[in-house]
Image 1 (tube, rainbow, N blue to C red):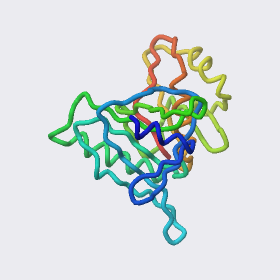
Image 2: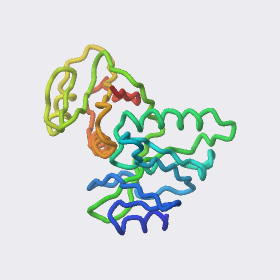
Image 3: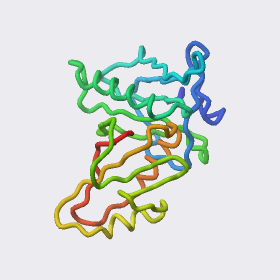
Image 4: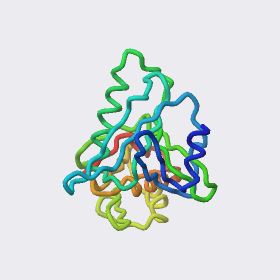
Length: 209
């Protein structure tokens, strides 16, 4: 982990091979502090002819290890998610896959000045819109449950007070134009939500549209 701890010196400026930089997302909370036996995946922010491109480098990745995804926070989800889908599929289909190996997003804890990691091994992405029971994160801190506008500090209570007659899955969806930085912050927020209502489950299926 020394390589990742040193990275925080510049707060979230990740310099790696080829003198390319990755600006990591920052948050004030650590979900996972350390990841052993890992391989890095890099997704760089690149501009070509005024077009933004997500440039992937996974040449040092080993399928049997945990994968740490170092993704530039400036990239929009519409560019990041298709690459994640492809990379997840490659790992899942590999004959050398380790069933115990996980996938993590890296980010910077700007309070502790350390690296932090967010697991997403079980998350499956869909490029589309959920039909029912959706928490939606949009631009400018927009948050909705179905059509109900909410503040973040209202979401947990709203979910736990839902009237349900049978077990229900709640899906999480994101505006495809959100930055990866906003996505990670919203994911960390969702990690803090405590569901006490019996029969309600937050789905591992995430929608991007």
